[in-house]
Image (tube, rainbow over all chains, first blue to last red; front, side, top):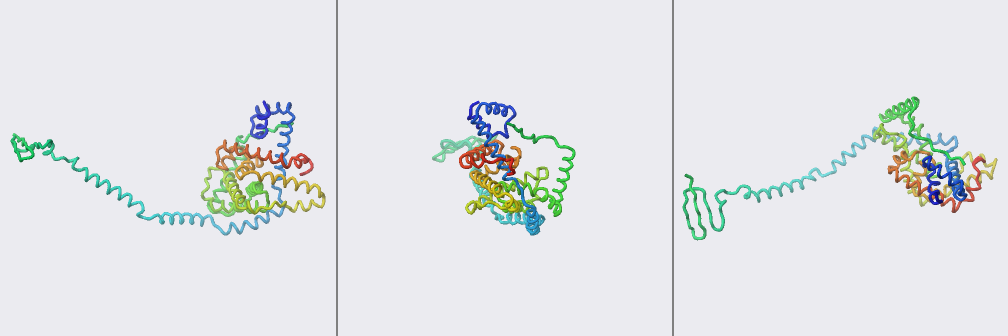
Length: 159
Length: 213
């Protein structure tokens, strides 16, 4: 193992697997520089734990209680519960009651227009089904031809 | 050289621990229902841990007191939301970390690097001035070095390396994936090591833990 990898392992020492710790230990035996760095970091960590340990004087907790009690008594968890419910109700009421309706109505109007516009294609008059090139075939009446000048109408009669 | 393997946090609970957990759950349920005495019990149980984390984050006893009280006020207000299937400590530590980060951000510009004088220290000062001077020097160096960490790096470093929580719990508290926690942790350790080596190696190397620091 090279020193660069050892450096990573030194920093990650508390989280290493036993096998990684063994590899690191082997390297530290043969590399005085890494061993020095390991000792320095471990010593620093111990110092940090010691220096930042929470050793407070005896009166700390009595003062603590004295200042916490009025802070807690000024609030009530039940009141907070109701306050939140009330706030959510107010929030709900703030949303315009008909806010989302125009979009909905608008969509319906568009659909109605589309339906009305396309209605003739759905219900085509059977009588004009054969309309093509100025030729109309009317299914009522006997077969006969009527020439009205511009178009020819054939009527097919039912027997 | 002694290599210390960290304790396995996943060990099964004993009967006594189970009974304690059940009793705690009962207390939490009572507090949720508005029982003030039950909440006071929870404060008594967790105040030292909460204040300890806050102290490690901000480096000042009075600020730690203020932050931890804010934590309990917030907890009291929002306890009805707490899911009793989860760990209360995780929830409390999360509020503590967030409150500490808020505090650091708020007071970043107005911070004074004052050395604290607790009652214990003043009493000892008469006995050994040099020892106190050395202790304060180390404190100053370490707090100064900790200031190079950004709030997230500081949070994961405090929880994992100083408070001794496992990575999984740190991830739950900070709301980060475990891989991200590992990354922040590596950055924090690396920055701290660099800072201490660069500026405070003489102070650290000349300190012997045996002499009651």
